[in-house]
Length: 373
Ligand SMILES: Nc1ncnc2c1ncn2[C@@H]1O[C@H](COP(=O)(O)OP(=O)(O)O)[C@@H](O)[C@H]1O
Ligand SMILES: [Mg+2]
Image 1 (cartoon, rainbow, N blue to C red):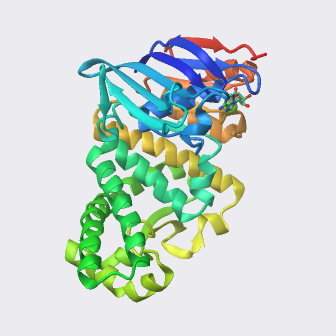
Image 2: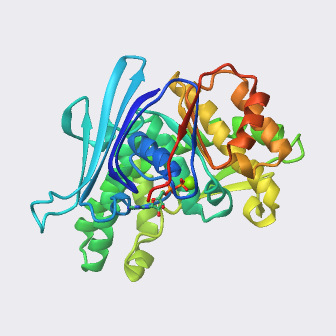
């Protein structure tokens, strides 16, 4: 649970401090008031990135040289503080932009030591991108979820992306065999670790996802998740290296790595038929159902694996849901242990109606943002 959030030069916010209680928190205000910004900041201290796909420099307040977000949170082992700062030293004109993580006052912590300390799940209109977008969107979803659960997965991803960069430089430099093998081994070691976790995850996650789809659609929809790619036969580091070698001629020509976990594909299909992908055959309503099912399943899955309740960040989606999806969402929120939930909305009138339906006695806190001049 997040107790305290301090923002400095973050988006339109020059300086602000918020105290939060447990339960439901409604953040209201006009368009552009900074509602999503607050959720974005909470997301940042949770998974180190903007859920709006923004770059760090885009989150620095215009005309400022850095941002800082600080959160005090209560976990099973007590209270902790995370701070993330990004920018450059204002006194040094040529200084590089750097991102710094602080945990309980220890500066220069590694990202892997911070990610997932505050587990969270975001629900936003952008979730449709996971359902309807390119495979990279679904890989991103997977990577984020697994990184929050397993810091070692996050570290393997960082390792993998460094090796991938090195390999593409190597491919451009007329490499000899020994050099390529050395780079491939780096890639393969991280790749196999990532692959293993993804392979465990997919079947494990499919059932809560499918259950939620059925619940929200009153059993009219059924989608499953499939993971496919050139890594299909890979089990060991040697297998991974053999796969890379198989694609090497092509990779040398294209000067990039064309096989591996960064190219694997994730499908939402009817009955496993990749010609019947939701992004091609699903209606708008079916996609919406799937997006909601995905995120509510993520919440249950993370809670089960962590033995702790993730913070829910719900950005602007309540008004988008039709009555039946809204009802099943209320069911989800009211049906047990959702802990701290942040909602943003411009329209509190609709919310009161929503609240009545929830029949939940959780504390409700209203934060009203004034429009910035
Ligand atoms: N880097 C930035 N510096 C200053 N203002 C910004 C920056 N990025 C976005 N904004 C502005 O911040 C305001 C708040 O945005 P947002 O949190 O999305 O509002 P809301 O969700 O309440 O509609 C918007 O007016 C936006 O133009
Ligand atoms: Mg918004």
